[in-house]
Length: 218
Image (cartoon, rainbow, N blue to C red; front, side, top):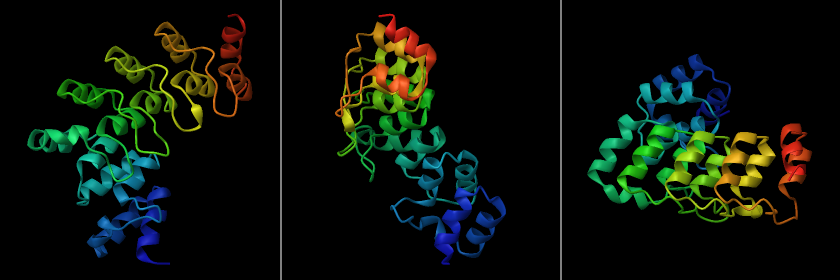
């Protein structure tokens, strides 16, 4: 097994000792790439390993603006935006805006700061996902962040890959609070995925009884 493979496996396993030993022996591993092209820091973020991400930063991992957004690090993101405000409209290597990454990972205050700086609320990620920040926040069950984006003018009916809308994601996740929020903001209750599944279908697939009751009562 290569050291690079061992590092990504240790990150996934949240093995602090192994990650530390590998990086201390080979600091160049901090810029290694996973099979899908992610840096160790982004790999930890996408694997929902915030402690591992913090450890990698502590061990000296370089932090790009997009990695800062994915890790919720205002400390690293603020000076980058101060130096280059155009980053608000740029895309990460995997096709997301800074706001899209904050929405996906659920960083409410960082997303608020980006909006205050002028980030566009409805720019979708690059194909094939083509998901808006609201769609990402809904998929991640980040209800308060969805409310923030809706207040900023986000389209409640924006579609993404597969035809999912934020309301359909809420139904799939069993998030009644978000379903009600989106409905109150003019989300289409009759929306369907590309394969013809409705919010009720998705709620039934997940056995989300409260949503089933709410949707059948309409």
